[in-house]
Length: 406
Image (cartoon, rainbow, N blue to C red; front, side, top):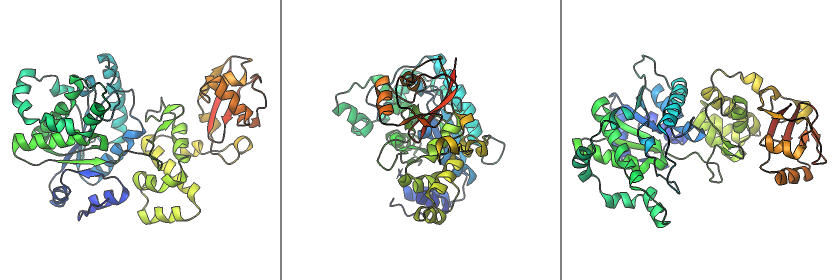
């Protein structure tokens, strides 16, 4: 990352891997060194019931900047979620019902209020919903006042749009307006809350550029965009995707145990990067861990740090209790496993599908033939084996489920 910051906050964030792109890195460095109050914002569209691991980097950066004295504004995209951001998507988003959007909004707001400080301190965050101002826009007035300030040529050149067009995939006029609305969000916050900085993932870069440009054209003043890299594994895959679905931040969708276990089992090659992002360890200490043979200890620190941040009320000692007799050295808390109801006499291949440890009976039988399935720590030899009592099923060394016979 070729940024040379003099400001200690930006320098530390850059060294830890939080920073990716800037609309003006030198100007932002000067702003951070000015000792002026800095208000920044980040937005989340409530397109699902919960935020997921992909959003965690944004939330952690908000947390760090807030602790450094900056004032966050957290925007819930109650209005923009009605349209859908086309950014880096292969197809148009599914249109969401208003009631679903509201339920998602309420759920996400509850979680964010526990991860970011909204107290009465000097750097207290504000939680806003862009439906409060976007729903009041008069369309003709909006076109007249802001239409001339957006270049269709530039929009078509943005990767988020051009890639869809190159693949000849449908891009609706509705989605095409998303850039305008998010840009207007930034202008609104700039004028009403003196917000000068937008942060977000690299997939939001196009929207940031248009927001900064709109502020310059409308007010003659400067604002800034700062993007973060997308959270990916060392082999380039998005983090937070598993065979059983996304890793959610809501404990009702992903239990704290499964959340902890996900981070405990990350690849060795990802530990250093993730510790720099999600732990408070000094960078030199992290590098020392990785160079030593204490990689498993480092993974536990990583899992502890992230889980305690996302689920502060979680009893980590309970999560980390091990069942040596069943699972050897694998970290597993049987009492924390998700429980699946299985009818008495169900064959093991069907039980694996019901408990989400296999995608199909064929896949389950292949796992059994490969000696990869256990019932209470005992290898299953025959896919016709029937479950007769409450048990713990395991596939390999990392996938577990608790079954209750009904």
